[in-house]
Image (cartoon, rainbow, N blue to C red; front, side, top):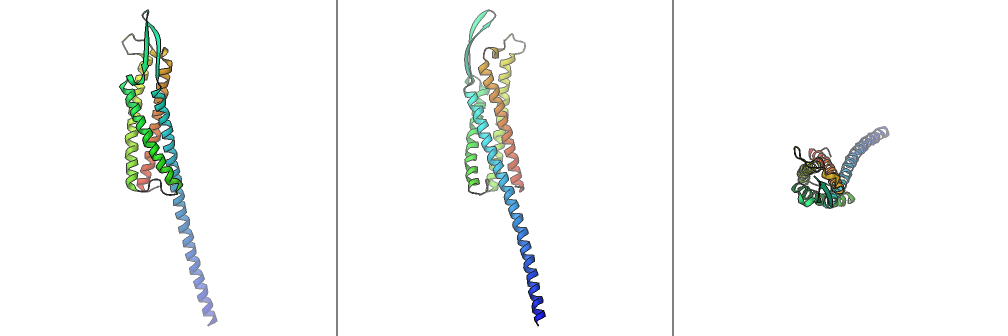
Length: 208
């Protein structure tokens, strides 16, 4: 009788041990998933912060791009006045960059708040789809605006083909430098938005 009781206790102990092992495995798996999600959430917040900063620098450089100077053409002296608002391409880039700054700032505040509360940065698939679409639209707008502004900057440096126009950037160095650096930062913002889109896709596919 005592032997049967002892065998029963050993059986119960083995079953409890198995259950404990299952609990440990399940808990470890859940923690790994949670840590992976946290890493991706942190990456998303960092990307939002970088995109906001880069876009803000691009916007600041563009709106401060103005210069007035004198130049000589065919023996005549002319006054050159350059400002970003005289070009439709540059105005378009300013509008797109402003929208990117506002969007990135809102997303940074929301994502940062959720991260500090230890909740998912993108809590629903609907919001994930919204972020993906917004990142795609703004990314395409940024790269198109940057390309258009790059064309204006290049024309200022090389002039118009088959026309005897000088290199205006020799006289408008401050203006042209601001344009060039602003375009570089705009294209960098596009890359950051593209990286955010990749995280959005991973989240929608269920890998994050």
